[in-house]
Image (cartoon, rainbow, N blue to C red; front, side):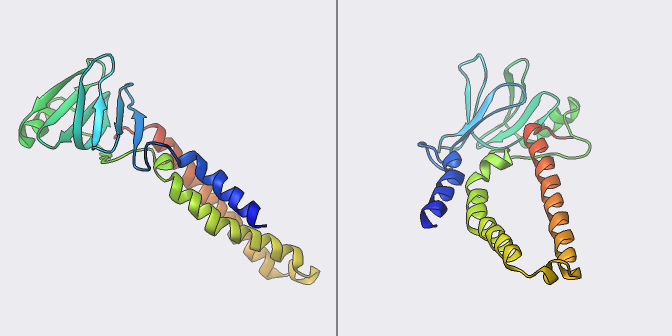
Length: 188
């Protein structure tokens, strides 16, 4: 039983382990550029160019553009033109965003790290799955197998089953929405 448990731990955690480090990540922007963190802060590597913008603090995607703030300046990158427009003051940057119509009407999805939730949360979700959900599932199955026929047919069993199914459906719906948001990081 112990070897099975350790095998499951390895199986859940192997996807999220890399040789480079736990905080490192690399993702493709909606326009095909590369953003990531190799341990020295977030960077943006502009596609088909040797330019790499480093020390990005926060950013958002909207209408094929990336609006971002670095440690010392601000920029707007039209992902199709591949040339960032730089601004030294936040006021000028915000004014340029407003003039270009790059302010989202409903929701500005600011990012400070990897925007792909399932990738970022792989280790915590794996650990939660192995140490919380898997033992609870084993306990629930064990209890169902060892219960009497009378308890199975009781009203309490039906109530538990309904609550369990509704909870699973809610988790499934939230996971689907989050998966969709990971694939479409743009603001609205």
